[in-house]
Length: 210
Length: 274
Image (cartoon, rainbow over all chains, first blue to last red):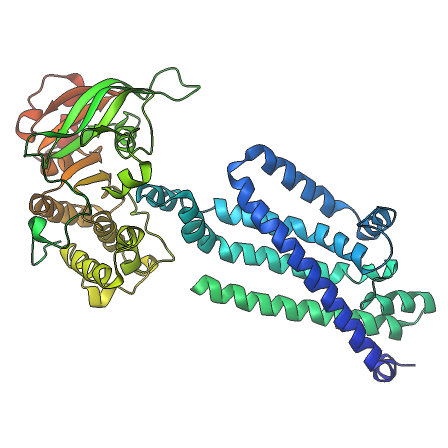
């Protein structure tokens, strides 16, 4: 069986796995952004919490993904088998790039600009929303882009704990020793990553130019 | 920076600029001010008293680290004295609401510190916008200010700071400082980062402009030439203390080693008379 014939005969199955995969990534990224961007804003003024949270996020990043899925299975509430556990793991992986870029973006602003903002009589909230965030937006988006590409890749492993997605074909193909089946999962996953990267690069570029 | 109109007649009056004081009355007063930071034995400012009179241009002169910028930041409460008080318009800065005080005082810094994501017009109109002026009034004021600093609004209003030369950015910085027509203007080496030709151009225009504006100006520099050109009074700082002060006419004849050190900078090219 060639990859192509497998692809054609299983196209509806591959299509629905792709949709599942995208759903996993979208849910995980949304949660990661909602956690990491405000946390990144919060740690700008708090050095102790900054060291701690960036440290934790870095350590999480170093755990091999298969191991992390394994660790999570026995956990109460967030663990078990299925997409919920997978999403928790994906969120943990996505935190670091977003958190770090949010922090770096907010703190790498020209000090003269911040001094001027303060001296003009802007309140701290105004400085954050009208100066720091707009100027950091490009860098924050770059972090989101990195995290999205990582998450699309890691999400293939989520199939190992029964979360579905394109990884299903990869694991099945490994078990069947069939390149055709592995590629049916790997190629769409790679395409998704490339498309997401291009799309977010475009958004980032638009915002930076503005 | 020569505009068609001048003096206090330009633009809408400051929101709450009280024109009660007469020329010669102090509008800013330092009373025994000491400012120190933790971990540094010598205070940045020690036991300093002085006053800034209504509508004068006071130049704070000194080397790097002499405390000039610290003094400036004490005026708009970016810093608070460790002891003593800084009194602005009769009220200690700690009794002022910091935001109100800062919107009441214009501020111009080196490299301008313009907001790179705002247009020139948005930069200039920032304080009026924060003060919730209506948009038509802001637009009118912005146009007026750009003319005052010698930039054609049609050509420059919609540009971003990155599309300007250093001299033009600094002009926008001055216009922004004047935004809501504050009675006091603080300037921290505003022309320090410019090339010598542009710098002396802006100094000349600004000395003209400051006379017409009728603002109380506190100007920080380490350049004696600039001080002599712009000041109605020069205050020389060394290690956080005032070591000499006087009008530009009298300043050079003051007998103090730091004054002589600064005077020597006027004769640095051998064979060229200062």
